[in-house]
Image 1 (cartoon, one colour):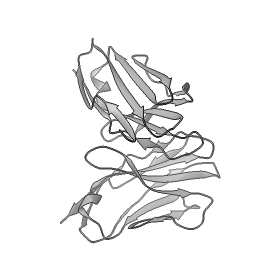
Image 2 (cartoon, rainbow over the protein chains, first blue to last red):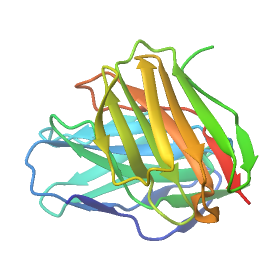
Image 3 (cartoon, helix red, strand yellow):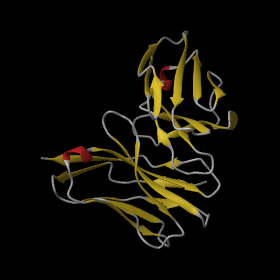
Image 4 (tube, rainbow over the protein chains, first blue to last red):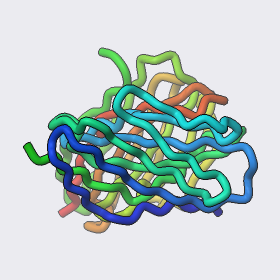
Length: 114
Length: 112
């Protein structure tokens, strides 16, 4: 079974600073996908960034970037220049090729301090 | 309406009531999902439908009964629930074969 682990349930960051959320996963698959989802207080979950395991280059979306370490099965999210709107729960998720079932971690609460 | 919508947004019910949650997606997707989100726990996948056919039931108690009449609509029928079933129920959709899922805002369910 695939598992996704997120430690540090709550992280605080000063506005305009950088915060990094960690995620590790366990899998025996070679072709898989990793995601970070954001769930603001309004509850609608939205995709922040995705990474295909076969790609060596780390994904980047504006202020969001990942550090994908395939051998270590680690997938961290970096939020640069944090903004008040970044305050939310962030979930790491995993699935493998040919499967539309997502496995989620417990989430990290990000608090942005003005 | 755009994206994935869910109604009602909040629901309070007694253990003997019967109610239904509704999900509708406006994205042209052909796979739909029900998740349960409880505090301090990972999201739990409950059911998966592909092209209106149920392809996964993740050991969900029979007091939860899903229905998918077409690729755009998904229901979760509830009866004789327990207080521990109180949670946020999220619906999601995707294109079959694409891994990105789009979520609705959820229904906050409280069972008294």
